[in-house]
Length: 94
Image (tube, rainbow, N blue to C red):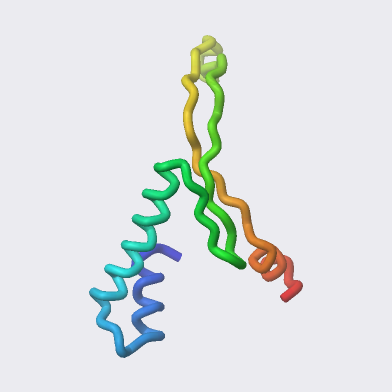
């Protein structure tokens, strides 16, 4: 599902809301999650999962094309851990 499909589904299920308002709500939620992660905060959506930021240390890597060693800088990467309800539902337990 992509963002526009999510917006359309929410708008269809809530006919009392204008589509532009649903779009604004969805965009605000995504922006808040992104901003919180950029600050290094953890975002937890009960039953769905938790978004956090992990730090990857600097390391020596290898260019797969040439075999040459390259220095890879330290970086921060997003991490998602599924919640129990989502995990159970994906495995057919709920």
